[in-house]
Amino acid sequence: MSPVAIVLTILALAVIAFMSNRVPIGIVALGVALALWASGVLTLNQALAGFGDPTVLFIAALFIVSEALDATGVTAWAGQQVVSRGGTKRTPLLIVISLLVAFLTALISVNGAVAALIPVVVVVAIRVGLTPSQLLMPLAFSAHAGSMLALTGTPVNIIVSEAAAEAGARPFSFFEFGLVGVPLVVGTIAIIALFGRRLLPDRAPTELPSDVTNHARTLRTQYAIPEGTELVGVRKGVTEVVVAPRSELIGLHLFPGMTTPSGDLVVLGLQRGGEDLAGPDVHLRPGDTLLLRGTWENLQTHTSGPEVLVVNDPATLRRAVPLGVGARRAIGILAAMVVLLAVGVVPPAVAGLLAAAAVVLTGVLTPTQAYRSVSWTTVVLVGGMIPLSTAFISTGTADLIARGLLGIIGNASPTLALAAMCVLTAVLGQLISNTATVLIVAPIATVLAADLQVSVLPFMMALTVAGAASFLTPVATAANTMVMEPGGYRFTDYWKLGLPLLLLFLVVAVFWVPVVWPF
Image: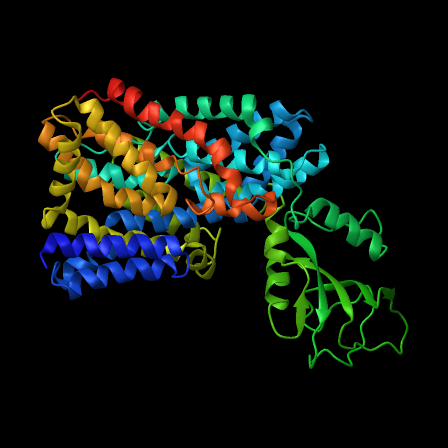
């Protein structure tokens, strides 16, 4: 079997595995890298080179910076602005939510922005009398548009920027993506505002994220906590726990107002079967509930063991506190990283790694929190699929596919070749990860530009626009999947609003991109 046939076979098997959703995508990516080595297409160093690629390190660093903003309540504060500025009418609320998630996405990535804002948007929808299904899909789709506002919006931007430089052109600057991002955000918001009500389902989900404000009010009522006692604040909070079976706390005498054996937490309430417990003869039994108050760090430390079962994770409650401890440091680090990326005095990977290190060194996150914040699935996906792009070039597979596309369209204009590439990208992007799609199509785009003897920049920018147009299925991106359950969506709901947005992105990619970056 020829090297080209081997590469195409590996690609086909990878696409089937991605589409099946039965094999973890990280395993698929690793399988691709190992298969390229085992088949002799690449050497071992080439097959594993993706995991040392600066792009992968930059992406990992961005996850840490994103977690710093989320854990310190910066995104919670942003969510509060939705409530205060969006009002209660559907269209203004949609516009504010879309603009907010687009801005956040440009800084902390699609998945980070959507994950942080889902609970906020659900609560806002319920408070103003809308079903979450009317707001959550617009949230995810606006994030896709917002990813085109800056280099840090999505790993795809980083990949195409590096690919453009490797093709002999130049990398894109930090804000250069905004030249297509702004029209995409404006167009996306216009389509959602004008047609969203008719194209989105009006369906209640089976399960909703908790409203932290209402949760604190519920705890205050249940345990009869005086109004003057702060339950959820910047430095201190509360959490409800259940005494676990075989816990060492069983038999211990506790009462409201006393400290726990560690001395770090205060017992605000004690109940059994929903009834308050008090008196000198009361001793803890399995199933008793305690309301504990202390610093967020102590709550996390003393409720993470096997002695109690946590009802609401303190780390989750803490994220709902606007501009909590470390928020200013996190914002300052983000601003410094953006400046470094915009000025270009250091490579993007260096700027990202410096920011990630600063997050840990300034105490915004612990090293453990930083490691846990990285989406290792994404890191492995990109690291494992980069060798496939290498194989596409080294074996001539990219040349074969590019010439095939040129053979279909004939000696037409570069615009038609650009359109063919964008359609291919958009189709693949609905079935497999858009990151994997771009890694596959990037070498094809390079060859198309070289064969047509035109600049590679419009092909790379159009590629990232088409890669962001993953709207038709819930499996196209993690953001689409995240809103499915809280929005009560079905598989067939996505294409109705997704199709006009897909057409918008293709029009921008094919006709607007060459205006800004001429052939």
